[in-house]
Length: 314
Image (cartoon, rainbow, N blue to C red; front, side):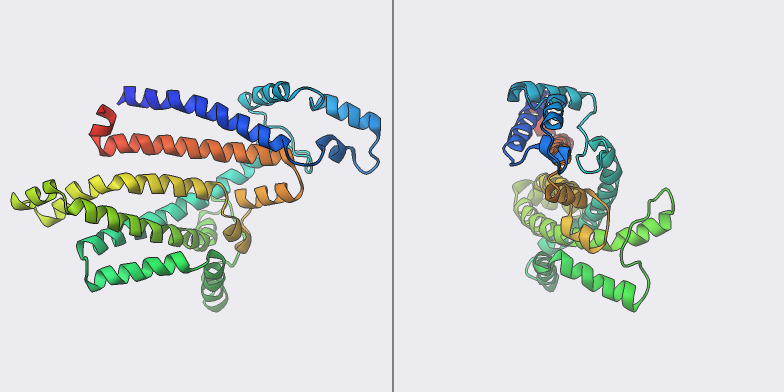
């Protein structure tokens, strides 16, 4: 297992370097001069020249990349041109909010999608199967912003059970935090649950038709053990892949949902940075998001090896 993990880590390092080069290179193609933006309306040539020198904009692209990477390796992603705050500080403020939202959403998705997919596969062709498929179609077809507004009207305006918007830190009030996060987490988890259900059903149907499943049944193994220990475990590999990718998507910022529920997360940060042409923030957020995707794929590879020993031995 250790050898398998080391091999995967070795492949991650060059991938991260390539991704960082791509992010930095594409950022340089964006229009506008950061030095002129920081110089203000007067556009004093002396001030612009000083800023260009300070920000290494007068150096070749390769040299600027090395300066930037040196800062990244030391935890310095630059400074926001709009708020004059370090990018690492802004990310440290917003990332935990989106991370909590993503974790709650993926819990909803797994709790709904996998059991529904298993039941639909085991009860294929019955009312259970059709009902689960209809729920999955509803989840895929319902826009997140519309579902969020409907939940606000029902649980906040009509029933008064939950707050309509806002965010409370769990360190301040855990109960208020969960009350403010449950609706947006369900909205995001609902769509992912529909996708997980379809993939789980498809994978389970494929596995249930295999020889080893029929052999287990012929040997008198209980149906519960056949489904949970033999079929589901082997059907988990595509589900793990999908779950890792969906979790990465949630970390990159659920923009519409965060806007509907006024949650100060990663989505709002990246939208504001793009509109304000705050290039350092855009660079930092994209780098963190790309790194999260790579790390989640690594975690999925490790999960594969734990679920199926043939992968780590092969």
